Image 1 (cartoon, helix red, strand yellow):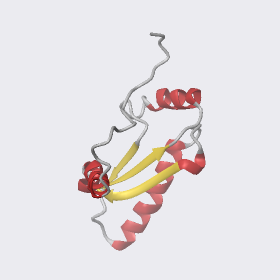
Image 2: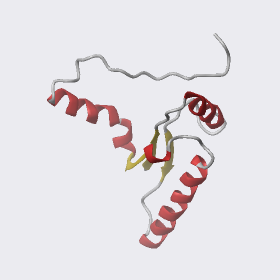
Image 3: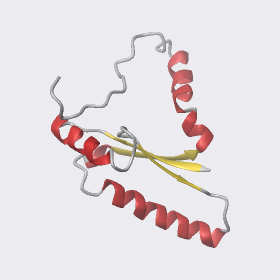
Image 4: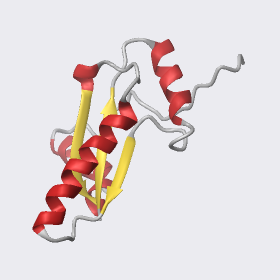
Length: 114
């Protein structure tokens, strides 16, 4: 099994929160989009799968208001996706940067006023 992983960067919070709320109907409270697919198929079927997968991803992000030049895609194995933070940890540890405070966290923003 493999994963199509997209990271979408925004420079407008209203656009970000609007897109996040739009995606809730497709995914569970995340802005990273994943598309699972089986890569163990015959060569002819694999080409069809790649073309279909591209169209599915295109349809999923169509109409979202993220900055298009900041759409990053990776096509990795399922195991690599699950272990994605560890790969970055190894790089940061080698540079002595893993133990510094991390400037990010995961949070869902809704329309409700707090």
